[in-house]
Image 1: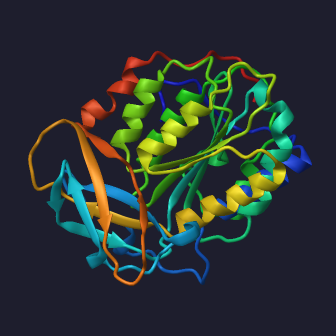
Image 2: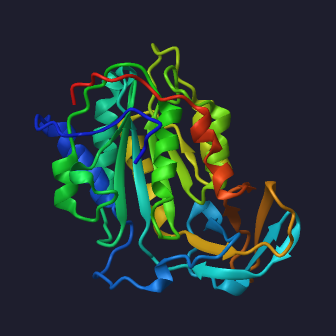
Length: 339
């Protein structure tokens, strides 16, 4: 439950064909970025209950930006506040992921639906039947996209039934939408977590501040990818916010200029999720609460110069404190939505 927001589940049956097909295609791909036959769920895909476990999504690229996905654990060193750590969780396979699609449904998105359609088509290339998917829409308020009360789904048909037309109306509660999506991701037991935020970066309706959302992101293990869709006539758009959200979580901000670029960006994000490493460790020092910087070093002879992308750090706090930012903000939006 999300008692701090005016969140409603989509139950409209009037769907615009193009938007429905587009979002269906997008979520079909995002429901997994690994190919191959279904696998039985196993403990290797979950985090055991370990106090203080820090989970890092790590992307390694080589020359010309191509992904390097076949390194072993011995190639990695994790530095927490400059101190080497013992890696206790290591995944490099195409493991299931919990992925949330966070879509701007405000009036500023009205002229950009073609780009959303293009992104959807590019994402529809691959899937993993064990991924845990959900949808968050936001305009004046925040909406969960799955029908029937399901927190997550791996069922393509359920995703299709849950999609509704994008009405593109109202103001923009971007920060509230991301806050809800991050809290929802925390309900998944999967190590691998990501959000894909499709927006122009503007916010004129949230009860959360950017500072609060960044704090939530730093406490989360999620990677945030942002896709900026802009219109020169919109005064509230803010690409800097999209860059910052991606940077602090080890994700990447994409600012495509054309439909063709949107399609390419979509494929890049799908590939990034598919080929990420997941590293986990329990900090060997007891520095207590507060911000801790993180650096991952890769040494792999024969690969040439490698680039590493991961989150810049994390915010350590007790579970009760991790929810403070949510409690600080009054309810978002008002009632009376017709959907």
